[in-house]
Image (cartoon, rainbow, N blue to C red; front, side, top):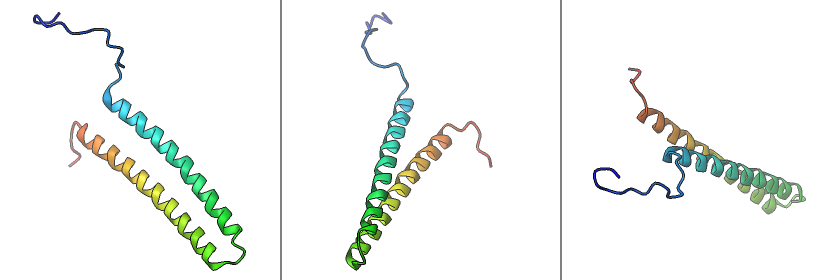
Length: 96
């Protein structure tokens, strides 16, 4: 009891700070994205190999590979941006 107010002590919730939970979720999402990107690369490679000279299939395979690479770059740049903002907000002294 603090100042006449009763706070529950056993809520069953984690005592982990919110920023750690968010970073763990981001790491998990990045691992899933990495798996999906590798799967996209493999599928695009198989499309390219099985195109047998068909220009339409070759262009589809190249487009899919391009979109896989763009997705990975966007996800990684988002993580870098969030880490940079976190470092700026937690900085004790600016290096100017």
